[in-house]
Length: 120
Image 1 (cartoon, rainbow, N blue to C red):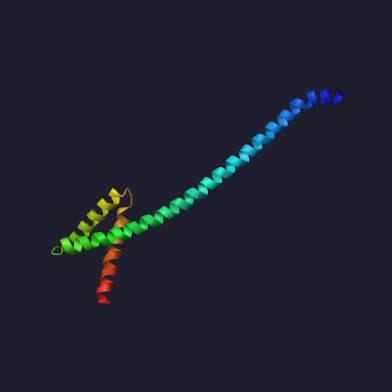
Image 2: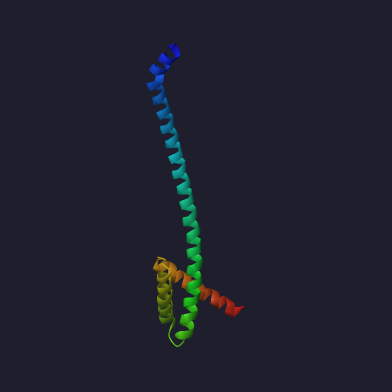
């Protein structure tokens, strides 16, 4: 009987302690999930940007080759514009949003690599 009375009197305190522990554990678990989500997001963003760069350089090389063959009678600036339009269109089709400076840089890189191959 005495134990039963003690448990009845202690029950509100026990419930409060258990609820506090559950709340604390929930907070720790949510914090850990948020931290893991952030790390995973950073990893996927970094990995995606590497893939985007690879795609940019491949498409820029395509665009350069396209402009060189289709617009061979045109001047360098017109070829660059045509290559730029080609690359912008292909990147847009792929859903990639890359700045015009990066696109131009990738095309110029493809042009420089082509010159190096011709010299070698």
